[in-house]
Length: 355
Image 1 (cartoon, rainbow, N blue to C red):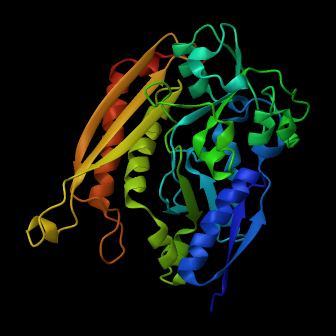
Image 2 (cartoon, rainbow, N blue to C red):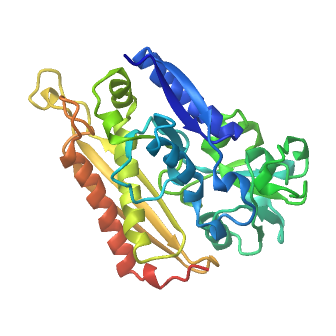
Image 3 (cartoon, one colour):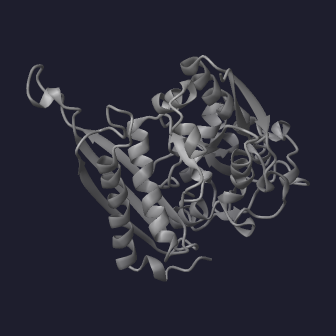
């Protein structure tokens, strides 16, 4: 009889914080003892720009290998770091409730984006952020940066003492930039929200698909075992967040097949008003509407292509009463993502250069 479960995590402070939180929630629900195992990934130890390493998937591959090799039972990822195509040999068993999806400006002297002087140097390793920064502030100098949260913050004057000397950012200077852009979710999770000088509205900087959400991944047989861990995973899965990221990742997967330009996407669920007690409608699970906004950007910020669409949901749920996946509702979310992607491609997104 199982008494423990093992969770793989990257070694950074942020990754360990996220994984510990997920492991503790699953332990409380299952009564099992969580064990954490640190997995080193290529993205953590290899220098060079993130884009040159093949994108965010470099952070996930070693964790996934540990799950497949049964070294760990589960892996916890930042969902935006997972490739959009999900392999059959692995399952995202839970997507817990999402936190702040926005990008964070961390600037010297408390400056906001509009207050940065012309020619200010802003650091980011994300082509999506580069493109949208250039669109709103073409006068800025964008600097490619690597490293963990603390290493990146140390590039901002006044925050140099937070450098954690991450191997992937070996030799990085300190205090040489006017600002860096990071994810609000990560800063909030490790208690670094004090470093945020502006939470950038999605209308200014559309988040990455899946941003602000975690993914707990395992082998399919682990999720289907019916034991305490499997039941805890099912209970940890947040229906609203799962529907949002299903649409966003379906859009990303479709666009990646024919578009190399930076992509941002954000879905939201609009619930129907509460029905009167005792009414026929109140007896059901309740529907709603899933709305998706997306942007494809030229890397130089010279052009942004936006699309918006919505779809009615038969229910705001992702599982049926017997625990099986609600294929109909999840299918609506997926088809919405594909529809918005097709609209972007029809608008010329496939003609945007990747660099």
